[in-house]
Length: 171
Image (cartoon, rainbow, N blue to C red; front, side):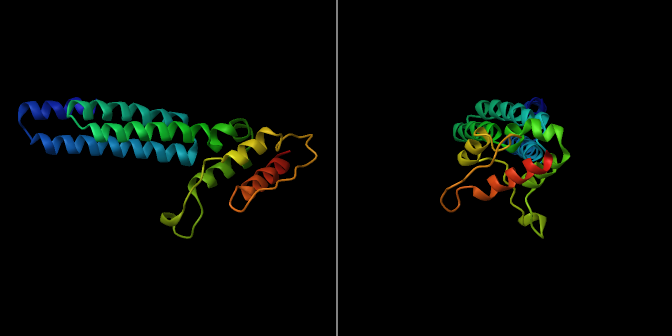
């Protein structure tokens, strides 16, 4: 991998080792976050897997250079990413997204976020517990005669309504 190339530079004495290590770390972190962003916005499984391939390479480099705190931070990010993927629109609504361009567009807009300035957009791909329960309870089933949702403010009712509307439109 790229870390081997950086290690060779260090061994040959071409660059200061701290500078090379910093460059290698920055390159890997950039790859990790780029892949994560692609997964969040497009749901691409290859990008999700790339997060972990690059994280493995970064963890190896961190172990070789004795950076235990940074190693722990990468492990924490991996755990966060796995959990987010499990609860993501991309995973939970995989069948609907694959079968219908309306669902794909909804997932893409959710991942990208909406704002006048793209830098202010805040995407949301995670489905909260209340939303997952509504889906598991048959929210999108064709024979469903409706549901009553009673939850406190900021508990996810709007997203549940969006999902129900999309489910109806997709039928």
